[in-house]
Image 1 (cartoon, one colour):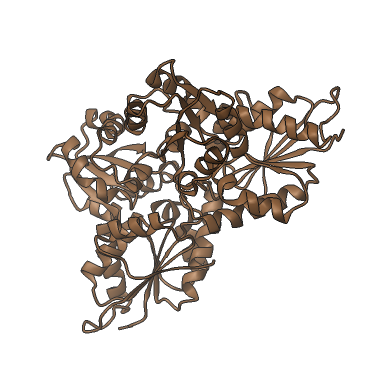
Image 2 (cartoon, rainbow over the protein chains, first blue to last red):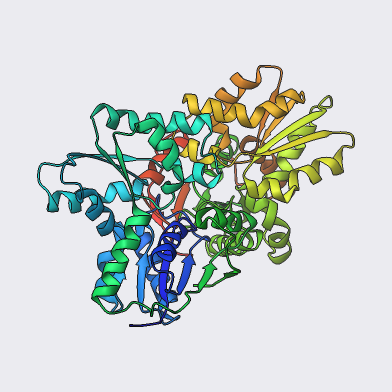
Amino acid sequence: MNNGALGIFDSGVGGLTVVRAVQELLPQESIVYLGDTARVPYGSKSPETIRRFSDEDVRHLLRHDVKAIVVACNTATAHALPQLQQQYRVPIVGVIEAGVESVLSDPHCQRVGIIATRGTIASHAYQHALALRRTGLRIIEQPTPLLVPLVEENWLNHAATKLILQSYLTPMIEKGIDTLLLACTHYPLLVPVLQEILGSGVRIVDSATTCAEHLRRELTRLDLLAERDSAGTLEIGLTDLSDQFEELAGRFLHRVPPRISRVEL
Amino acid sequence: MNNGALGIFDSGVGGLTVVRAVQELLPQESIVYLGDTARVPYGSKSPETIRRFSDEDVRHLLRHDVKAIVVACNTATAHALPQLQQQYRVPIVGVIEAGVESVLSDPHCQRVGIIATRGTIASHAYQHALALRRTGLRIIEQPTPLLVPLVEENWLNHAATKLILQSYLTPMIEKGIDTLLLACTHYPLLVPVLQEILGSGVRIVDSATTCAEHLRRELTRLDLLAERDSAGTLEIGLTDLSDQFEELAGRFLHRVPPRISRVEL
């Protein structure tokens, strides 16, 4: 047992979908969240820059004495997680392992579509992790860089969003995918429109929910869970504060966020 | 006369549309360009953060002994230019003054639409500058945050782009605008599709071209023009380097860019 806080970071506020999933599954856990909104997005930037930013994010969370860290950003997980795990002694969990486990939990899954930022797709991190665990899987990757701006604008049901999703997804629908992996923490908000386009025959796996389950297993294994009767708190720090980020935070959390402070890295 | 280099900065590579316009008009001028690609975009961030970033950008250019600086970013001009002009002795020119002059060069202009990032629109900098110079102008502002991602993806003619532009522009078309001001250095690439939607009766003013003309007047006034027979050079420094930024740089410049180096601020 350990009542210390969890540290969770993302390039922006998208990682609050992970926070929401963790709070639902582990309400006793306190969370210190860091969103690097001054430098968001990470998804279009180089691996070297993403590693440097992620390292600064981890250092910030360590100054808050967190007991474990969740990298709630697919691009940062893809490019920086191995280095971070090597460099720091605190347990650090990413979103990729969890997503991969969830995809493979269906023994009949054969054709997997993956949508993500350009950076995550370019890393091929999901493709490698899936191929390592199950041979013969057909994997179809598609960078979908316009989805983060569309989600941030809340154009979840706009005709243009559907048109853009159709452009992105048609090639994988034609290849008969049975599973679509949402490899970006912004995408869970698009699940209804995605399911409408894909039809009910395609399973959607989102990295936020699966990450919370993976985190519970890890915390249990390491005996780091907080006591059941404690009440978890949430502190949100952003490197840039604006009305838009506050409004977005509420949408990702599905409730009015607690007071948000601006932090320096 | 002064053969020193001009410093030009932007949050990313969009400011290269200004570089292109300056090179066409003033081929004798050498240019040191800085794109803050590690922290791009500025358009969605807070005024305070934009001022801090812009200050660091100017300091970087001053270390290259530039004779004058162009803020080739509308959001940075809107939020940071007055402070920068007060703080530094080097002449600093933004994109707003030039765009405003160009709009008002048509004495019959009465209804002006302005499209820009959320940050530029929220500053109302264009609206104030226009209203100060001509009373009775009807100004219709529209934040268009999805246009930068669409231009960066090169979806200039995609059906979704037209749909999004129609969503943004229909209210101003219905209000009978006679002029549309493109208040973001990414937007000149959208001129053909914009003109198609607006029809030939609406004049489009782009901030890149008008900024180059304004700069020539300022350099002439301050006797800072380079000698006519000198051959201008171009150095491009970006705070993050990636294949996508290099490819984008070529599209904004309309030619293969010179060698690009990564710089630290």
